[in-house]
Amino acid sequence: MADEYKQITNFDRLIHEPSRLAIMAVLSACESADFTFLLNATGLSKGNLSAHLSKLRDAGYVSIIKGFRGNYPHTTCALTKDGHRAFDAYRKQYLALAQHLKK
Amino acid sequence: MTTQPDIDALIRKTRQYEFVDGLRDLQMAAIMAIMGAFAWFSLTLARMHWYVRLILYLKDTFGSWARWINGLVYLLILFAVLGGSLWIMRVLRRKWLWRESGWVKPVRWQVPRRITVLSAVIMLGGIVLGLILLSAGKVDMSFVLRMLWTATGWGFGYTLIGMGREIGLIRYVWLGAFGGLASTAVLFLPLTFGQTAIVIYGAWTLALGISGAIVLRRASTAIRQANHG
Image 1 (tube, each protein chain N blue to C red):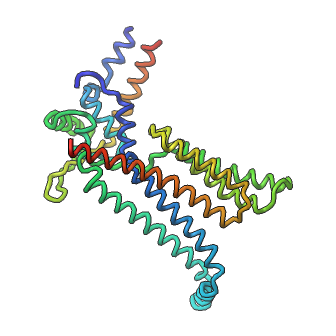
Image 2: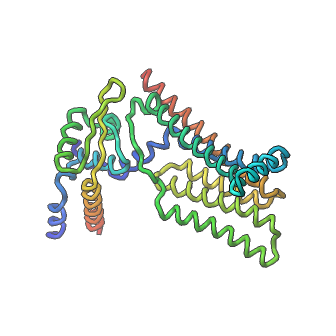
Image 3: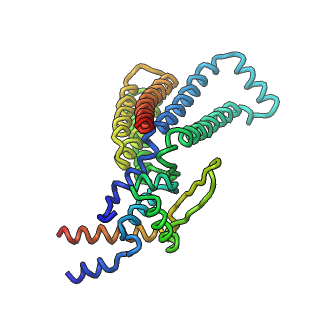
């Protein structure tokens, strides 16, 4: 049991938060996605999504490029190398724990 | 969001996004049509006197490398079709299909390496099988030549099946299975090498074109309903 607790406490807390985990999962499956796609895919509100993206950017997991498409602002997000690494590590840890709990 | 999201479902949905409007199928159909057209041209042009005269003139003027000029033209056309189709897809998605649902730049290779390697092995295996049967005296040379196209069909079919299973799009599994079976059927028809190429490319064009058209229609209906709803 102590081992399981240790694994849970070892989780990357930044990614473990459900909204940020959803953002990371979506971005891990593509090269980049825009703000609208992330809104639709995660079901978060604009304010929430923006706040979570800022946290992930500050941690160096996500890069955000703000530009214009025509006359409209357009924000594109992508996982950085660190982001990919952190997400892969989190997934491995999560799957290992899930398998351990199944036993 | 308070509960843990289904990571696999999110990843799968994002990877499927590129294929849910049917444009990829239509692009593949266009490429298959071009390849079929090349095969047809190669068969008919070789019999046209003006074409033979043109190639001989080019060879005499520029040297023996000019014989490959038609291959270069084929390559240029293929790249033009590829580039053009990508541009059309980008415009259609930006202005219509993905306008409300958002823009995604997909990963470069949706097909995992093991599937690509296995499809190459299947292709080579088919060719080797043909050669073994030929050396055993069971088949003639035309069978081996047809086998080249059949094996290509098997390889591409397997790639589609693998991709369909990987990203959870069942239509690619059906398309791959259909293509594999059609490629096998062609092997037993009394066709020449060139005719086999045309039939196989034609079958792929038809299958991918129908699949793409159906999916695109479905996507356009969904967009219309979302706009009116």
